[in-house]
Length: 96
Image 1 (cartoon, rainbow, N blue to C red):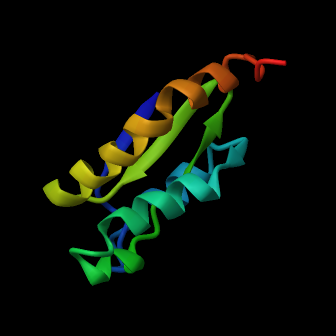
Image 2: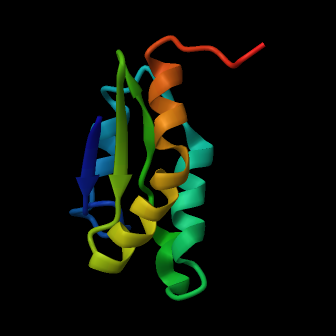
């Protein structure tokens, strides 16, 4: 797993999402959306984040905002889904 922090905004120097997408095999848009949504009640500008989440090979890559609060909120979202996501990426299946 790789977690980045920062460079996800809309300024000309915020290029983390572009560099991340360049190496991803597929994106997980719902996870990035949940991370953005987690900050919305406290920080309305969280909707300006362009962070992406996805998988490259068997590695989960997560872009988090650069602010300490944004990182804290993003890690809170990951805490609920990380184990399951990593199991699925490793080839696990749902119980039948």
